[in-house]
Length: 461
Image 1: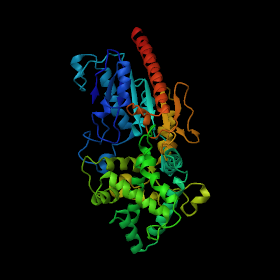
Image 2: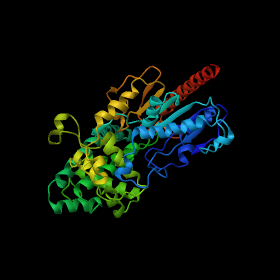
Image 3: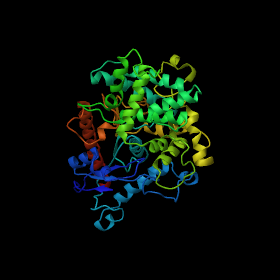
Image 4: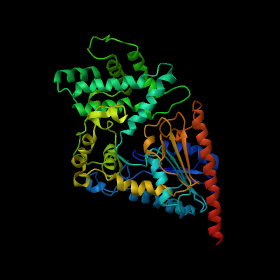
């Protein structure tokens, strides 16, 4: 899709992809890249990722088809589009890839993306520096982890600050963790009556204990990926607001035999389900890990993403290790002990056959796709300090995983969450987000000037 509203001859091309979701008009009309295009006379071009939406090179999503879903193939798809744009110097040829106007040969390409598309942006600049002049890579999880228990530690950091920001105490994270531990005592007890009773209270019956535990975590962490603004914090309003009450109770006022924290957790889940509009059958479908395991039909983005996790970078969101002695590791558990590597990985060969029989070779993945970033210039890496994905980005909570060249910049956005800087500007944006955008815009303009100088030099030669 293309937005050429602001394009002036020679202006930059801001390329992006919707990543693991189908492409929509919002991807070119309603992002910060659109604002960059307006400020620099640029064009926004967003390209759908192979095997998502309508971009299907093969007729099904079997393991035999998805074996062509590799990082190299994905990047070459986008590189092919850039080459087509580069060759698109006449209005006649512009129709080849659907551009509404002809593009000047000196128009530099800036790849912009947040989350997985942010990783694609950085990899495009690293692999094709002759095609991509620079990349804005926001919240990009470029460092693969087979067991990504760090996700929950990031969520916990947010829990520890959300209640303070909301005006309460500072024990939201502690009460949440206590509730998870109390719930695990029930789910791991083998007592069918106790398990059925708590499932009924949660409003999510008819799921196995592991699937139930996974669904609960998915629901509880929804707010952690939403933007924090000057007037709201979704983690406070969807999670911690319930635990204020639990922390202030010393006895079980519901007569359930559950702790105050577990009662607060149940109230939180009830509230999240009500807000989501999900019906019990929809919740069961969302949580059932074996649902449609043999369904290889197209238009299943969750299946395609699962394949990428099975075969690329892992990133399974598991409870912290070691499970039998998590306190000694210094890591607090914010999800059930039932959610271990086997819970996720065991579905891979069931879904995709021999193509995914072994765990993802994360070491090899990192050796190629993380190491390629070490010597890559003209990348703006951003990460929110409260982003649960932060510890798999270049900018981690304990320092940079790489020290990129001086022409690349790594920035922590204080108080921000996931890919917040590339969302459309709002009056309620945090000052830190506004400042990140200002820095990013300056860098982008530098890359554009540099690319134009290089282009003139090539043509003069």
